[in-house]
Length: 159
Image 1 (cartoon, one colour):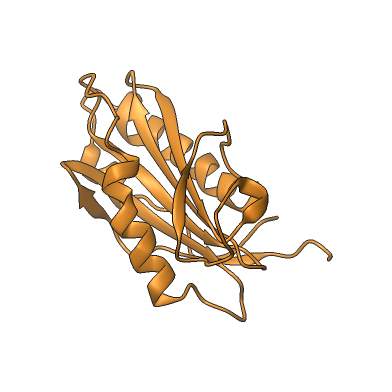
Image 2: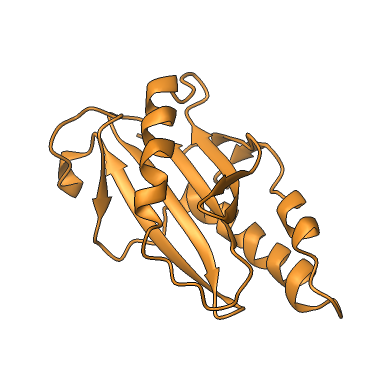
């Protein structure tokens, strides 16, 4: 299959156990993320983030929910740590190649592999790095609200 862009949407931020997270959804142009996949992903999110350590960095980050072209769905939760670094926690569903128990895109399992993201998800990471520098590291006073409002533009993502 030839490479193609996917659609990126920003459904708005959420709060998970005191952590403020921007949300990004990546899906197929002809098939938006199914409500049951979205619900299952966000139901798992608190457990996925349970081991994030509070090190004094503002409790913020972003989440990418990505629906693959096949049966796979992916949830990536990125959190800022040490003031200028990112940790990621990943869950997948419907992808037996990643040790998912079945091909149900709403049956998420926590992945222990050292994945950071695929080409569509990494486009968001590029934006988030710049937004963190712009709002949190370079101003005289960090601006968390400005950071949380600064999201990558919706539309095609991939190239």
